[in-house]
Structures are given as structure tokens and as C-alpha cells.
Length: 165
Length: 367
Image (tube, rainbow over all chains, first blue to last red; front, top):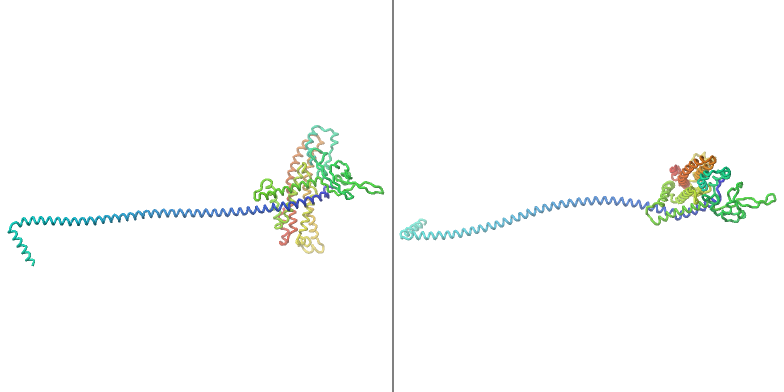
């Protein structure tokens, strides 16, 4: 059977062809391809790892940011509250100061009024006394116009003096 | 197979034209001869629609005096003699091969005797072999060049397809079987896989660059199996040889009659034989079925136009189915050959650290 007897020529060429094929591919083909495939697999692995890390970091960062936002919000609220407090305080203080000032002014006014009043009183008294003296002078003048009356008065005064002593 | 296809195309016309009896007699076909012609090798390459012309290929022979001859196959294609060489006739021992004539002395008379010279002609199969080698080199180096150029980009189209095959074989078969030795034998196994795959597929193409029944030729599969055999036995470890000559079986199986060593030693040689025959028979079978189905048209053509027409439709459908199946078989056989080679090499280079489980471990990956 021709089919089952290997032909020498074909065996020879098969060896030669396969040797050449193997030499070429083993030198320039497979190592380069395997290296690249492995390298790319590594790269992809690294990329995935990196992406995972990045995602984790991102999640972390988001959390952090949320925390900061929350904190900021709290601070803002606090500041607002503080400002509000301060505002009322300032107003209160201002009011107190104003009332104090007003009190002072009023006190001063009172004092001056008192003084004025005292002065007026004094002046009034002076005037009244001068008026009274005038009136008394006039009355005395009228009453003392006669001798009898004068003597009577002197006597009474002298009596008075005597009584006193 | 090529001229068969052209015959298929022409056949209905001939039948329709109404061949007469004498023409039929003249064209009477010999199925066996046709089948063997198409399965075997040849010194020229058929072209479509022409039974006479063959693409000439170089014939390289060494005559009985030790001189080398190189000439075109067209010089002896049609039975002519050239430089003392010709094609062996029908009754010759070497039918269809290049034979030479040399004078011999028989009973004191000088007679011319046919002899088979050393023949390393670039036959159809050798040419197909070269074409396949060039194709595989081109394919792999193109992919390698692409990787060098575009580094870590994702491969697409052709490169992607080749890479898928490489990954499939390397990560799917070679690495699990050979483990840390994968990088050492990977290049050989990948080369074998792509070489067989392309040879198989080229064999299915009917016109010129293909059509040679290369992997269905026992010389080709034998060489591949022998290379695996040599790698296995040359790289064989102490553990491998111990398993052959002193396997872990009860002593009376080894002494005084070495039954197990004999069986094991026999197994060393049956492995490459199995590799040879498996690939050879599978691919040959596929080619035979397609040819026989096609020939059926002409055999049954004797029964008239209606039968021929019907057979043509049926045969072409079946041939198409068989060819598609052969595409699958081409891949599977390349895969199986590579897988078994990997397995044999793995068994041969096993360090034996796993003790009894060593042999079972790589075997676990086979079907």
C-alpha cells in the first residue's frame, strides 16, 4: 500500500521544513508573543488593581469630603448661631449702654434741675425775704409812725430781753 | 480533488448533451485509481478544468552512479524519458514515482532494469509543505511584529484571532499539562499546533495553493510524532525511565520475567505510533469520504440523467457537509496532536516529586 509507506523525499523535506519553521518561530515568533501576552496580562492586572485602589481612594475621598462638608455645615450653623448670639448681645449691650447713658443724662439733668431749683429757691427766698423786709419796713413804718406805738414796742422788746435773761 | 470538482461542474452538461455509449466507454472511470491519485503525492500540481496540464515542479534525484539530477516535472509528466528517468508505469513496482533505468547483467546479457533513485523532488506535497511553512511563519511573525509595534493595545481581527488560538493552546493545554516546564516546550508545541492546523485547512482548499493531502500522508505525521518521541525520550528524567524499567508493581511482575517493563517499553513506541496514525487516519478519512461522495456521481452516472441529477444534488450536499465537518476535524486533530504531545512530554519530564500521583496528575487534563 503506497499510502502506508512513508516516502523518503517527503520525510526529508518534512524534517528540513519543520526544523526551519521551528527555528524561525522559536527565535523571533513565540518568545516575543509570549512576552507581550504576559506583559499585557500583568499590565491589565496592575491596571485593575490600580483602578480598584483608585476607586477605594475615591470612595474614601468622597467620604472625607462628605465629612468635611458636614463639618463645614456644622461650623456654619455654629457661626450663624454665634453671630446671632453676638448680635443680640451687641444689641443688648448697646441697649444697656444707651440706657446707662440716658440715665446719666437724666441724672445730670436732674442734678442741674435740682441745682436750678435750689438756686431758684435761694433767689426766691432772697426775693421773698427782701419783699418781706420791704413789707415789714413798710408795715413797721406805718405802725411806728406814732410815739406810743414805738414806746410800746421798745417796751415789749425790752420785756422780751428781760424774760430771756 | 481539483479535477474532480471540475468534472462535477462539467458533468451535468455532458449528461444533458446526451453522451453516447462509445463516449461513455472512453471515459470509463476507475474510482480506485482516481482516489489514490488524489490522496497520494505527485510530481505536478493539478489545475482546474484541465486534466492534461500540471503545474511543473522540480524533480531532484540521485542516480545509481551518485550524480544528482534536477529537472522540471513537465519533462516526464506524460511518460517521456529524460536523463534516464521516467514515471513508473502501471505495471511498475513504483507506479507514479520517478524511476531510473540501469544496466544489469542477466545471464551474460546486458538488460535495462528499473530502479528507484534517491528522490528528494519538490513534489506536490513538499511544495504544499513549503507553502504552509511560509504561511505559518508569516502569520506568527506578523502577530509578533504587531505586538512589538503596538505594545499593549488590544489585538483585533487577524491578530486577535491568532492570539485567541495561542492563548487557547498555551493557557488551556500546554500550561496546565506541563506546569513550570511550559516555557521550555511551549514553542515546540505551539509550532506543531499551528503547523498542523494550517496544513489541515490548506488540504481542504481545492484549488492551487491547497488541495494537497498533507496531514493525510503518513510521512508528515510520522515525522511530527517522531520529533515528539525524541523530545520525550531525550528530555526523559530518571523518574521516567524508572517508571518504564522498574515500575511500582508487585515484584513478581518484574522478576524473573519482566512483564511490566516489557509492556512499558512497548508503550514508549506505541505513543508516537498512535500519534502518527491518529492524525493520518483522521485527515485521510475526511479526504476519502469527500472524494468518494463526488465519485458517486460518475459511478451512478451510468444509470441515466435523472439518477445523475439526483446523485449530484445529494453528493454535493454531503460533500459540503463533510468539508465543513473536516474544518472542525482539522482543528480538533491539531488540538489533539498538540495535547497528546504535551502530555507525553509532561510524562517524560516528570520529576517524580508527587510519587504515585505523578502520572495521574497530567492525565487528569485529558479527555
